[in-house]
Image (cartoon, rainbow, N blue to C red; front, side, top):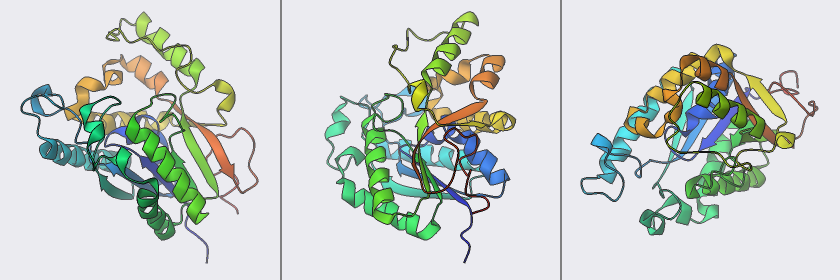
Length: 275
């Protein structure tokens, strides 16, 4: 029996689905591909109402998680994602935070335990294409939950052998440099942040660049749905012209390919549509 073309994207927190994969989720849904978003944590370590930070008085982890999951469902509706699956783990917080030590934090869950849950979802949906972060958590980001998401997804892919193609999200260094030059030229306040020369994915590792220009508005709507974390999403403060250019493509590094596909491609389903 033919398998329905299926894309599974695995992310760490509510809102992560937007920036690096919001465009492909919207595009492939519109093309009739079944899209599945797996979110590993509930986002407890995000900002609470009024911008109250984790660890500060008045920060309510449970309320933050409830709010962020509601925002996630709104984001999913904007992108048109067919299926949202929640692994339900606790947000570990940024590297070095006290929350890293919480025994239920996602980063402290045995990889094989979480991988078994993800593998069960792969068995259920049988995706030909799976996307997650690289070993650094996404272009050098290093967030404990992003690194754990990478480990868990790699383990599930290897355990099931189901995906025909497996990708890491990529932020090409040349693209990052160009984006920050555009932001500076347009007077965007970067809050003192300046990317290092080794921030992002080396251009030579990028194998796949997908045009998602027609879906930028939906991607931005999905990002705005996460309004409780708006203070942390500086890309929303970019001028519209910069947003349109910065978000028009999404890039990936292909790590597994069992089908005949070009070394450099503009479609994650290249080699699969007529297979």
